[in-house]
Amino acid sequence: MSERGYEVFEVEGGVPIKAWTRGVAVEEHARDQLSRLAAMPFVHKWVAAMPDVHVGIGATVGSVVPTVGAIIPAAVGVDIGCGMIAARTSLTASELPDHLFGLRDAIERAVPHGRTDNGGRNDRGAWRDVPAVVDEAWAGLSAEYAAIVEKHPRLGRGPERAQLGTLGTGNHFIELCLDESERVWLMLHSGSRGVGNRVGSHFIEKAREDMARYHIHLPDQDLAYLPEGTVHFDDYLRAVGWAQEYARVNRELMMRAAVAAVRATGLVPAFEASLEAVNCHHNYVSREHHYGRNVWVTRKGAVRAREGELGIIPGSMGARSFIVRGKGNPESFHSCSHGAGRAMTRTRARKVFTLDDHAKATAGVECRKDADVIDETPGAYKDIEAVMHAQRDLVDVVYTLRQVVCVKG
Image (cartoon, rainbow, N blue to C red; front, side):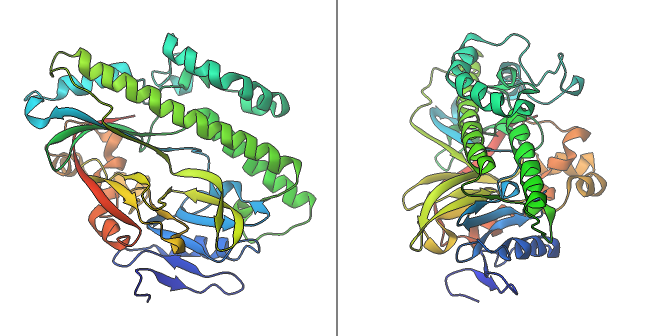
């Protein structure tokens, strides 16, 4: 056990795992996944595991993997560029209405969310008539997208423009929160929507095909990688970079729409919402310098936390969230957790928790209380307080937020 806050797990034939998991349960399957990652021959120094670590599809959520000469697309995942944005407003809690449904309803009307019609023409989670502001944003993304699709036509088989400025499903959300000074914040979580999923899935498949072509046998096909200098490596970097930009723009559009919707209700006085804002990815790849090498760092369910850098660590629907400032800890490759992390699968959560459980856990929060969000109930997640304590040498808390309104997809 290190005095610096992490545990070290040695991996036979691989690099160590440094895990900021003291006081936080880690499932055995997640450790197995991490061990397989750490055994890849091009991992630089070690794999860092954040306290919200849990089993992921392909690669472990809450993992930070620096590599030399190759990238594992599954270590980024398919929700490319997924992340957070938050804005502090000039409103205070006393200026909010006694009943908050009107604010929630306004946000839900302003931002398409969820998914219906099997994602088809009548999908309520996409635009039927794309607003001018979204079209303007898409104009800045469309040329690069067209060039990528020309080379990889499969990436163009689905919505992209119609989903820009929309929330999605699952753990994506928009919230109104209060900080310690009772100041109101808007915060949301989303990513690159369907087009990012297509990019991730396509290049995970391309990596598997390349492994077969090069006769490289892996213990886990999800660890298929793209060697630097190959065509697919270059194409992936271009596509994933574009998807990360799409995700950033997507969050900015939704934040603008949510702020405008709250203003238009007439339920609150005039306010500013640009006093402090943060927009950060937590599923992405970047080129960085660590321990004497230029490396590719994939963060899947992890946030960059360089010294002085602001980030967002959200809790669940009924728990606290945190605006943090990075400490620039080199041993985590300047990273921290991206949230509380799931304590159980969605399927198990639906079996374990009742509607009454969910209502009690979200008491005081204006949010959905129906069966379709049971898998997102607070008890399905790890204790955010324990998660924050486990990474106290990675970040300092700047603001502590508590939700009062939560919009779910």
